[in-house]
Length: 150
Image (cartoon, rainbow, N blue to C red; front, side):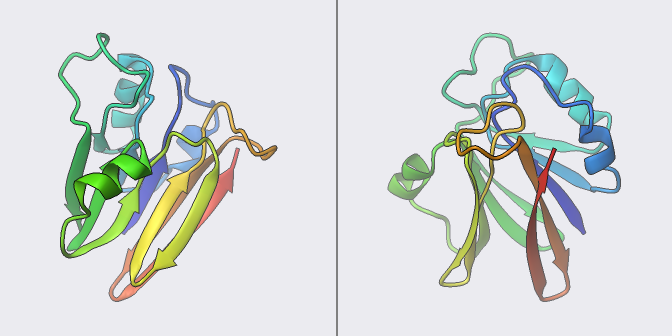
């Protein structure tokens, strides 16, 4: 199963997102979405699980949680906007991925069997890299994370 991961869109999706997320079965948005139109466009690609970021609020058709745990193909993924907030609140048992945003810097690291994944910013990266998203591949016992630069 392929999961598209995006964050910090701030109201605008890159034109290439449909191509990059072609074939994903789920999309995770880790906050600072910016508009309902972004969620609607992502939903046209695949089902979306999204959390509220620090710049979100007031535009949503439905309230978004601050953090969320979803199960995708038997794999638990914990989602929030700011990693320190997620750590402070506690990472639920059995989680294999922690997805977060906020820093606008792409990162992926395996710490004691848990992948911590930041897709970077799809719109305004801060590390000198181009805008980015991530793809999580779940295949049996195999887990893979790849950043895609837009």
